[in-house]
Image (cartoon, rainbow, N blue to C red; front, side):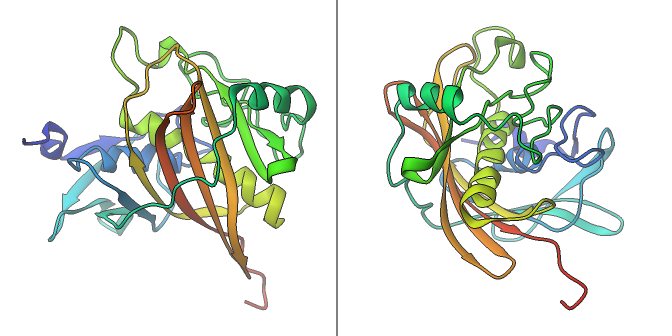
Length: 247
């Protein structure tokens, strides 16, 4: 069946959808392109920072690829990809709640209360508000997450850009905690597959884990599951730390 999203020629990253100040939130932007595909895993690569509140062109390429672009070139590139790795385990709801009590990250110097993905200072509907916390016994991070109904009024599922957004910050925290990724490490690509709809107001566990680390490159997995442990979406992402002068 045709995908109506494929006919949209422009997108706008809303002014509130940022992690770093003034820069479009990567997972949100990735989801805007991923919704143009009819299913299966999609890989979204980030080329340069996205502006906020600006209409940007969506350009379709050959072999079902899409880009968010302007006159200076692509910001983001999306294409179908192979299978995305599954999580090694799915934390329970109780583990996620315990992590919030014992190993919360909200007071970390790396935390931002204003981040679209994990900022707990955001008003309902203005951010995902994932209270990401450490699960050191499993080398994971996790959040007991209830997407606020204000994110999607009515009974409709969360839009794709919010689902992909929920896969972003947890992976960054896993890189920081378990691979010592420094502040300023950013997403180079996010590859994900959405398996089932997610509904605002219901209970989910969002979580992430380290996969590998080499030099400036950090590879992590992330996922969201229902409270009962059914996988909703899973991802792999590559993160790059800032280059030093010698590099």
